Picture 1: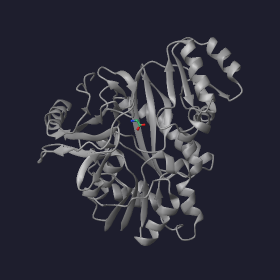
Picture 2 (picture 1 turned 135 degrees about the vertical axis):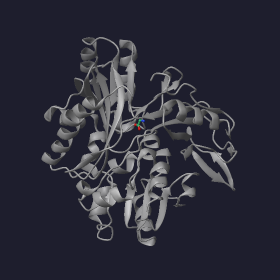
Picture 3 (picture 1 turned 45 degrees about the vertical axis):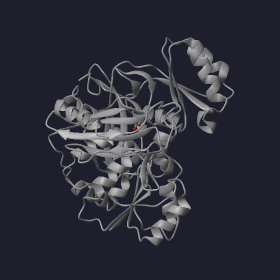
Picture 4 (picture 1 turned 120 degrees about the vertical axis):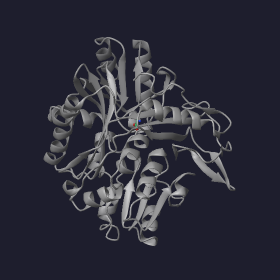
Length: 422
Ligand code: GLY
């Protein structure tokens, strides 16, 4: 079958890499893809939210399945666009429809949903533009730090944790003032929880689900988890600070009620669902839902899969997910992100990347890379992930840090301490 992967990040390169190994695949396309996805398929330069352009590819290339990586096209309704178009209706889309996408697309919706289905999550209150004074009064009654979340999608920058009331007020003003357009005209103020974060992924057809291995990411730009928040500077799988009984707790208290809630609400859902959790003592709490795989968690979860990912997607689209056996390697996996100097703030692009091959014991998953007149150059803040699957984290990280020296570009920045805390 012909498959089209939508997106251009490290997660999409990882999904495309795994799909490319499937015997069910005839031809793989990626739109728009990056400098790395060329190695596993054919890139087509169409933006992930250009639904008209995507339709043309699907018809022209006789695509049999579309796999959507990032959240934005899902929240904008790519799944519904396919369902409503007579020429596309029969093409399965792996990714939630618009209704399910509200789990990520509206923090308020997600909170209401969790409240209704008694899914453990921090307390919250939401405020709309025009309720600035009420929001400040509410914040006044809390103790720091203050957690403010833009209701809608804000390119990963919509969560601000402030140590002082003054900072929180300023954030509120910026959000209501339209810092993220409509996405921040509504703000959720959430109780601050202290614990250890972890990421949980399921693939679901809305009835059945398969739980993937757990992972953790390193969100801060600086060593020892300091500095600005990023999309993630590294990741590990599995998570060493949870055991089987905690995973069962996650399944019983969070995964099952979420899938059951979607069913009860009549919300069809076919795709990945990502639970951003906080572990407090021995209890899991949902900090956020995402309607996609994590990035850079995909880079450590997917390489641990022994079974065929495309086969899972085929089973999912035929409502046969219960017949699919997800096989996971006993090994562990780690990934370290090579970023452009300055990320997540301002950074320069177009720096030539040199890679001394052969790289050993690692996978390179590209993100912000592109070809410019035959030269591989940087085109984003997170440039690529160097990932490794090994028997221990020590080995995986040793392979990664050794091989990072083989990859060079001006301003290459990476955290040297991934795994320091486990
Ligand atoms: N690594 C965090 C995310 O994918 O949202």
